[in-house]
Image 1 (tube, rainbow, N blue to C red):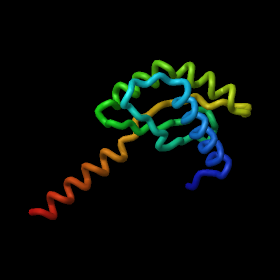
Image 2: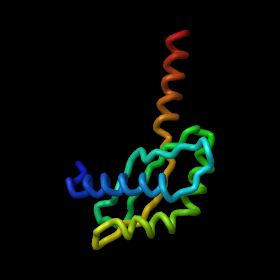
Image 3: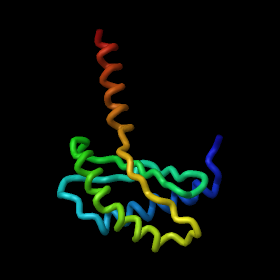
Length: 114
């Protein structure tokens, strides 16, 4: 089932706002980069899953702990910025798509070389 246009617009707005909040408000250690890979808001608007890509990958745990520690502050800022009756609760998830794609490419190269 496809995502409604309304949910797509909400996902886009939340992605933009969370990206800005993380860039301006979150104090992440030097050399760690966070990117909002995907935002997936539930149809009832109660929750929004924010998938975060971290570079370098080995800093994924650090980044997730930092986001969880600041989640209340991030949620508060987001709620002020969104002009919505129902404000979705944010849930951060580590996006492992790139790491999984790298692993698949590695396996395919090994198969090709055999």
